[in-house]
Structure formats: C-alpha cells, structure tokens
Length: 300
Image 1 (cartoon, rainbow, N blue to C red):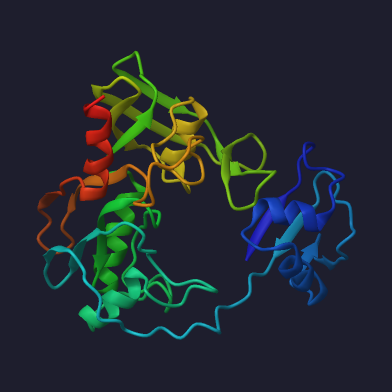
Image 2: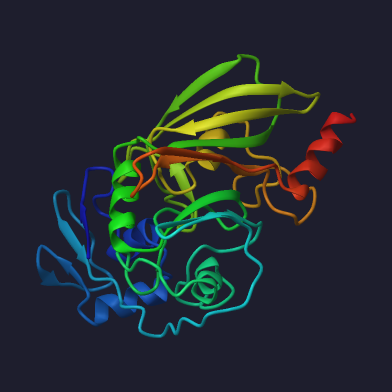
C-alpha cells in the first residue's frame, strides 16, 4: 500500500498521469487498478479522468505478484564469503537482483535459491535473502541473509548507516575539485516514469559524497559513499552535476561505448557480523568490462 499527499505542484493533474510519473506502472495498468478499486482518493473510488486537488490523499494498493513462480537456477555466482548467517556475492553485470512482474527468471535470487536452501524471508517470498540491492548494470558486493535474525540485524545497520560501503565510478568530464558532496532530493521523473530525477515533487532527501581518484582527458575516476540509499542515487546525482556515469544507458547523456554495462562498481562492503559481532570487510576488484573501458581513457 502506498500513499501520496498532493502538493501545489501536482494539483490539477489527471490522476492516471500523476501515478504514471510516480510509479513503475504503465498507463493501461494504472487505469486497470483504478477501475478495480485499487486506487482511492480520500478513501473513495475514483475515475481515470479525475483531476487531483491539493491535499488529496491518494491510496494505491499494489497488485500481488501471484504470477511469479520462483525457480532455482544453476547459474554462476561469485561467492566472496559464506557462513551460517550471510553470503557475500560479487554481482555480475546485467544480473537483476530479484524477480518482478515480467522478469521471473535469471535473477540473482534464482541463483541463490539453487545455491542455498536457507535464505531469510523477511522481504517476502519473492526477495528471499535480499537485504539491499544494486542496479542490474551495476556490479559489485551485496550481502545476503540466510536467516531472519541475520536479516533484521543487517537491515538495521543499513537503516542506521553503520554499514561501510564504497563505490567506484568512471564519469564523463574532468572534475576540478578533489572532493564533493551532492545534497539534492530524488523522486520519480515527471516526464519519464522509468527514470528518477532531482526534484522537489514527491521526493526524498539524498546525499552522495565523492572523492577524485584519477583524472583523464575526458573523464574522472571517483570513489563514492552514500548517506542515503535512493533508487539510482549515484547515477542521478552524477548526471545532475553534469558528470554522468560512463556507459550509463539511461542517465549517461553520451553514446554508449559498448554493451558491457555502466562503469559503476560496489567495490567495498563492511558490517558487524550478526553472530560474532565482529566488524568484517570485503573488497572486490573492478570487473573486466569496467577495466576495458577505463583503459580506453587512460590511453588517450
């Protein structure tokens, strides 16, 4: 169940247009949800043509993922570490973390179900073990919980921002200053429901810190850390300051160099172990696809 309180900026928009801009659903799916009574305005059923008013409360009941049938798949997984509580996976380029409508197979979850019969179910039956996620074309480290106690303790560390996470990215253009902080709210892009954007409308605060590692003629290699965990946060923020991620198919602004995925890698991950209470830390090398693109800039 999701709720939206309408502000002045969104007043007088059609309700179906507003929901298209603020969800991942198509117009036809939204119209179906409205028709079936899954969208209420101030607790009353509505029509597609209804123009929302300031202070309206829109309630959206999301459909259950009954169509999904999770099938364990024997797929290559780069397991960095595993014990009775956690699995640390170095996710490959192009791998979606968990199933969703229209994408039932070949996800990390399908591979994890084949690899281990013990995974937490705190996030529901379609996200077993998944404590946090990264984009399909972002590579790098993820922590997976094998039981609910471990999941809750790991999720609490994420919420309290006590986990250690470092990303490395190659971005377009030369960044002059050595360090920087981007503090800009992120919400759904009003013009494209599949994208996120820096916006004041229906957004959440987002803070990204970065440090320059190396400068090239046309690009900069940077290290990043997050204070918040918004969807596409690094990609949106770097695009916002006009240094988009190299090879990003959505926010990159430039022609793709190849189809090997964006140059964004979750390189370091650290947390307090749920059972031993000791701080453990992991590091993963840049993937070959990232290095191949990086070398093209080094050689210019």
